[in-house]
Image (cartoon, rainbow, N blue to C red; front, side, top):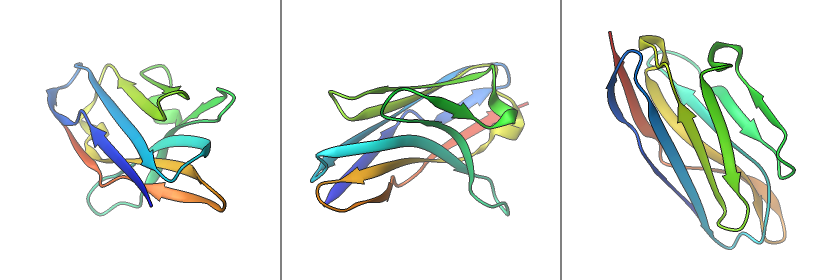
Length: 118
């Protein structure tokens, strides 16, 4: 079993910052990509940012220049630094890890709420 534990969500005013963290543990000897997705009420889940095992990143256009994703391969953690937050960033943010021990698959965190007030 693989567990993902997220932390760092909360309520912040527009223009503020938050940092999300996610730690993977359990039967996960190999991790490919790690990323963050978000889902606002009534909307589909969308990719926010993703980072490969080699450190290549990609971001949703809406967050480029404001959010930064990083990972620590030794600790199996991924973080999302969110700056200049906007009300439209309000959503539940989910950590995603593609990895495992023998078979590789996608794992999801439980989600953490980010609310940006105007």
